[in-house]
Image 1 (cartoon, each protein chain N blue to C red):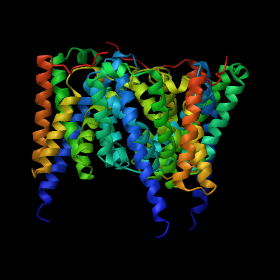
Image 2: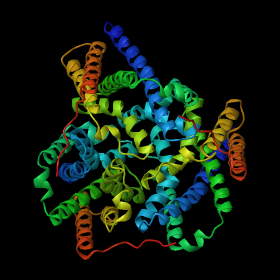
Image 3: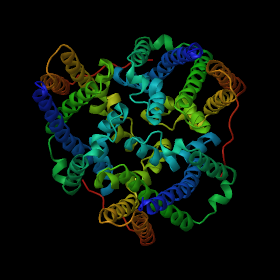
Image 4: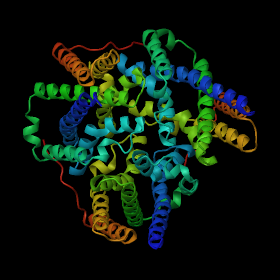
Length: 212
Length: 212
Length: 212
């Protein structure tokens, strides 16, 4: 009974992470949808898929069905409201500086990566798969968005993004295995992911590509 | 014991809906496959994916595994037979008037949307997710078909289609929650979806797009 | 107790098949990724998806969650190591003769097709769906690879490939239903798939396409 409070704190942190990042990612997905001249329905679909697609695939893989995104109406509602606001105010949204969007996105990525890896650990997946689930939760929605918009997923060709999710999720998993509390390990992993992504953005880091 | 008969009637209606719409959607998917110069195997794959893809994803999300499309051989058999007929008789199929195809497709959409939402309610999903499952069942196969054929899913850019599924599924869910019997609620939702889709087609309705 | 050894032999055969084919398919996926100028992360993702995507979708459909590819770290590790080797040695990999690659690929296809169908039978799916699961396991990873690289899945437009998986899986399922032992039935189906694929490659067989 004693260890229950820390566990609940971690649960609340996971929930807060999920909802905040859901709104952020939905906003970005909807913006891509408006750019691609989708109708209002299409914009909402892309907002939904970008925000919740990664977590849905994660939950289906974990066998956690129905996924949290469907089990609780708050997730799709959050995504749809954020998507609809972008649809209504496309002009002002376009005027948001890129730096602000990249910063918020890095925060969302960090939140998704560590909460996704955390859930995989709760389902007793091995360390490697838990890290993969973190990466999937972080970048899966963006991949689905790009597939829907018929382009090569940006995460496969552009700079340090998925790798930041990988490092953050790995740090969280490692810290958890070495006995750190769930909430603290998530903070460590999340901060590391966010910092790495921002440094890479500001310093124009890129991963090497292979040559033929 | 007393309420069993209405429940069984709804079950039979769901089964009939599924098989009829499966054949219709497989026919359309196969036609798109022949147009894209796929070989006979590719045509059957696209017929299968168009007809059953939405329901498979729905069942995986609901945790209803293996999905009905695999648990019962009648579903893939129906899709493959319809697809193979299109492959053999591509010429006559091309000559079917567009109005006929759109009308049959609207019927299939209505059937899938209400049966998908019904199944989600049977699995005790919340109202919003049940509506989303109806839309997914109705348009998911077409989205997968378009992804396989490497184009932006038509449902994201063209006129009132997914919205009709949305309205029909929502009407069904609302009617069920207000106490209407399952079979009747499905008829109400299905008729509404079909009517809305046909009016939109005949009157060239479109959804607004956002502007940058 | 007596029948346990043959069962275990089949299990070991399934495991060996999976790991060998995983490495082969990851190598091919990574090669496609390097050709598409992906960064090292993208190459690993495509290697992973090509090698394990079909099996993951199969397991999700069967309700065997978490899929074997995540339940056991040896699968992703195998895929990542093979993918990373291709990334490091892209030049030498390019110089491997096409005939060698096609031959190894045919072996991998045969292994995946029969082990996928076998697993579906173990989950008591009907004969048709077991065959479909074999085809899905064999070609699913390649389809996901092509979707990620934004092209029409090759398996839908090119020569006898998926059909070979179909014939091999069907032979395995048929032999099993007629009482043949699991391991023997897998050998029969696998050899048939491999032989058909190689003959089709060497003799330039193609499937007919429909005409409009």
